[in-house]
Image 1 (cartoon, rainbow, N blue to C red):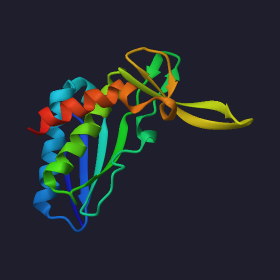
Image 2: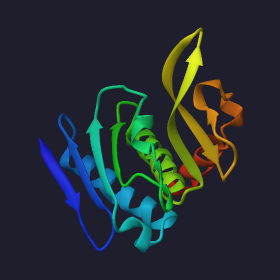
Image 3: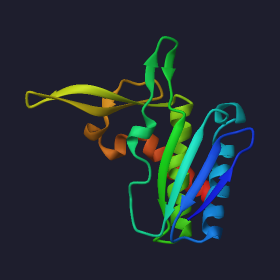
Length: 167
C-alpha cells in the first residue's frame, strides 16, 4: 500500500490506496489540491485535513454525509475540519476525478457555511430517530431524505462545478 501526501501552508491531503498504481494515487492527490485551490482561499484550507482512499472496486458512496456535519456553537456555526472520502476509479480515472471534484465542492460548501449539515432529532411513526438536515445559503433546515434530489441546490452546484474542474 502506497501513501501519497502533500502538505503546504494549506490543507493536509493524504491519499492511500491498494490495488491502484502510484501514478493514479498521485494524480488523484494533485487533482484534489487543484480543486481545493480553485474553491477555497488558503486561509480557509489551513485547518483542514482530507483523507482520500482510492480503490479500483466499484462504489458510489464517496463521502459519508457524517463528515459534512457541523455544529452550532457559542460563536455561531462551526463547520467540520476533517474529511474522509473513497474514490473509485473502477469506471476510469476521469470518473474518479469527477467524484473527487464533486465531493470537494461539498467540502467547500460546508467550510464556507453555504451548506450546513446537522444531525437533528425527529419523530417518525411515534419513534424518535436522528436524521441529517441541510440548510442551503442560510435557508431553513430540511431533512435531506425528505428533500427531492432536484431541490438539493448544493447537489446541482456540485454537478456543474465538477465538470468544469475536471475539464
